[in-house]
Length: 409
Ligand SMILES: [Ca+2]
Image (cartoon, rainbow, N blue to C red; front, side):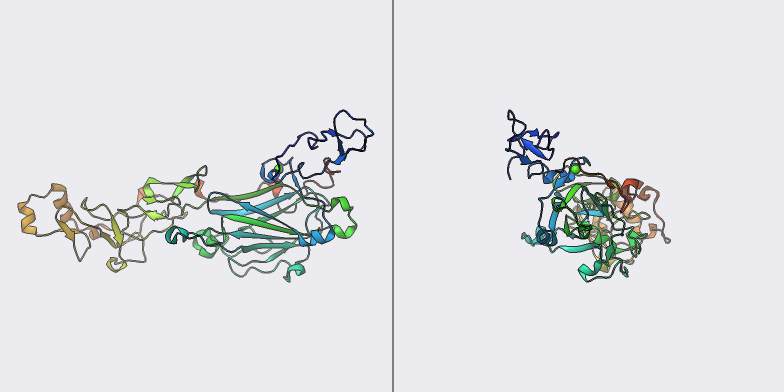
């Protein structure tokens, strides 16, 4: 990539830093006559770099080269790498500065989590997310087709009144219109939808121009994007309220009460495997459960065979203490540490706390009816997804209307 030299005021290249005083779409060198023929278009590859596409400044924009009709039909692809992990993405907004494309395909790519176990990285396929078009026939799809399943994909027809210049396209996963996506209002109980929001990379294909048929000037055969906004949150399995996104990979700040570990709070801590790992949700925190090893083991694992209520989280328990210490062994009935020989134990004067625990069968203490313990109140609201889209970014709004981009020739 060439080194960028962008003058924020005039967008002229360094070799021709002055805006032509008479014909503003040209730049000319310093210290030459105004009538010089040594001039270059202000629209050039250095003037509107791709980095302007996500600099959080609506006033700066990326401008593609001026294309032939064939190049427009072949289209342009922009790939956004979310850089430090796989997020739960809920909407994608593309804010255009010029003519809207005739058709758009938004795709996503997930991370290959198996690489941690196998050591090899497998390139994940691109998955279709949303089609949009002036007429969905270009994709051999139905206009505004139904969404029978939570992870169905359809083609949204762009409205007939899109502005000549500017406007935006919005892909909002949970508030699809005109058909609401099944499960949109029950995210935590819709696994297919939870899978569908996962993305580590986002790709946007744009083809053609919506208004080309109206005889658009050749100089406007290009794409202009002022900002791409991708909104998501860290995948913390409902066990964190905060996330450090300055790290690579990002790290969820697992709540202490969840007793989870891992960058994504995706595992139970070593001594908290009395129940299998489960994701928390709005109503149930699903904290990992402590194995009753009485201080005689440093880890435990879950054994479904030992669990009287394997389908429930707050009843039963299948934790098996690992490598029992202090002359204890695992009781085959309860999978808890038991003294090797009770008579010997009495003689050896076991610690008081251990004997007290033995008097209290842990199972009898479990509540018969399900009730969330007070210390396990549902997660705070900060962990809930925020789906509101600013009013000015609602789909198909006409933010730029007929304004002309002053920096264009
Ligand atoms: Ca920008």
